[in-house]
Length: 100
Image: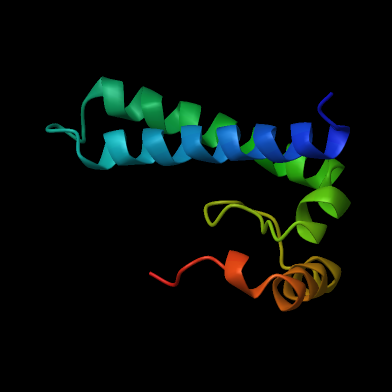
């Protein structure tokens, strides 16, 4: 049986991949000023606000498992989240994401 913690982590992963896919399609679109791109960017704003609310409601689980808010997120930096993420990576150095 899947634990609640794993469900939250999988849901967060799915939400972030949706945002990344939409951003990639908007930036590579041949006509960035079209109505399609404008609507897609509005939908992107909705997805970002949704993922912000999801992170706020499950912040302990996500930060204790090394997940930070999405880079496009509008959430402010919270010291507790950063400390939890750093503790996670100190315990699990192999799971640290690669720097780009």
